[in-house]
Image 1 (spheres, rainbow, N blue to C red):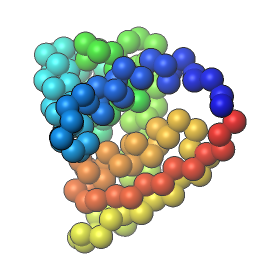
Image 2 (image 1 turned 90 degrees about the vertical axis):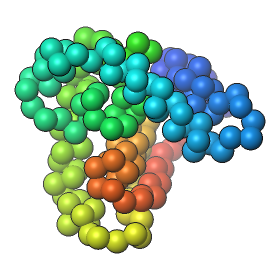
Image 3 (image 1 turned 180 degrees about the horizontal axis):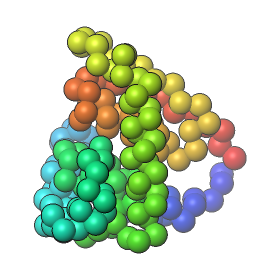
Length: 156
């Protein structure tokens, strides 16, 4: 099997924490607990001044103060354990916000339909699956509907 990338190695402790060490709790409860705990930590870090500096005054969909965004940013490796976004990750942070806005613009007719049916998305050549995670996050936190996202990539 292929060796783990440096990013995958950095995420191992986080993934173990999300999966949890408490038997008997369903994975969704552990993930919710992680998201809530990390959101509190992130909220302590992100003062209005820091949010303004990060966003440039724009209303970004993945701003650290938005519901669920802090945990997502941590899982995809853009946010540190203290809730901060390092200077090297700010460019990627802005890029994924713009990507999400563009995807939303094209998916709006489908995503905004009032239905309980899940939005089904197939992402091919997904790489690290960041787009898939963004879409699942947007479906839950921005569009208010379930989603089934299938990410497919060739394992090299």
